[in-house]
Image (cartoon, rainbow, N blue to C red; front, side):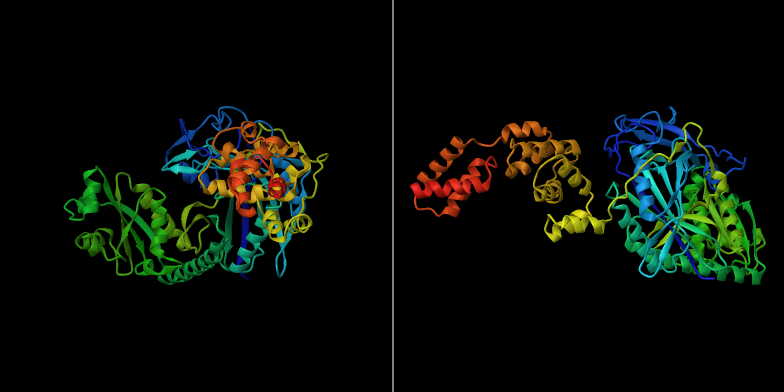
Length: 590
């Protein structure tokens, strides 16, 4: 049986407001308010508690949520019921379904997905199944799509046990493939193909707006989910590393079985370390901590073995790290920690043989961390544990057990939505966009605009205004980028401000040559209307006077030099072709 690889692509949608409230979607810089919460693991629809939720809740953490009332309301704080689902987001999701040839469900029912890691204030994430099936074409085959869902994005971390709420509730489309991907390179190809398809829709761009999760299982193993990929380039190496990690774990399983290995127990050995010269141990004890030792029978020397980009010892210590602790073990050079004498005593205390491994965890409350190491060691006897991991360099690190079906239960505060009467157009693909754009734009500009997040702004501008396509394209692609490069506040230039600008150009109240200056003014805090007053076109008499004065004051100068002088004086308040014509006439008269 070959390796199985599947992808989950999460893409933020570019809607006017969040999925279940009217809050605008903006990235905040200031969070003047905060709230604190603790999470509990609750039973799902069938009465069982999800293992991942139980694991997170057992840590007993308190979370701080920072927010700004401009972008967050009582819905995000779980102090008010959610509104109905955002219809704009639902329509965009259905457009994706059409491009993927996925079959929409008859009714969209919102579910609660238990999330106890702190990334949702309520302790759950709202998600809705929108379609099943479908496919997308890769170079050598059709990749089957499993599900298309619409859900609310989670809150990003802004510190230890601290989250910001400006992103919480942003509409997110989730596309999950079947485990049909056959190689690391094909995983990258699939992610790129789905990402390209999503760019045909109104989606958000930038860091964090799209994320890929990878599911991998090797023959004889189980499914492992790795979260948090944002760069396509990292996917092949990450998949290769995960395959190597799982194959190594299966090899370790065989060695443990041959040794008849087992995870032993733990003991409080604080007294053994009372006179320790290790600085780390002394600090822990001085702070009122203790030392817990554990024994893994038959595990000696195996913690040095490589599992992908890290050792098997790191696999075990990853479970302790989830509780904020590290481990020291007898497969290491304990002399560098100044613990040779202590580990010799521990072998006697724990009754360890030559094939056994001793580990310690030190700190104020290390019992849970030590127990987690024993738990991971027990899982090693079975091979590859079902885990959720997070991308970490070339490889990944453990975060929690893999969630199960117990995490889902109905959201009773949101009514279902019937899709029977909802009509949705099939959007153009990027290739179709580019073909049509080449009819009115140069090929290089058409190719850039077709793939740009500004395409929909371009499309809307030409639908509303009789204005040159090239002017709109260069404004969106080049002018905005240049203003951002200068450090100006381009976030102030909203879609509404752009619409007003193009209307003023269409009516002749702002010359085309003044578009950049108008946007500069808007980026600095002025309105487009205010900029229009300062950039109103010169009347014929005013322009003629400037030209006559320039020609008279610079006898014998070439036309090109005079043209530059006039244009610097009019400062964008006259079109260049008009200035050139009047200048020629003035020079003839002179």
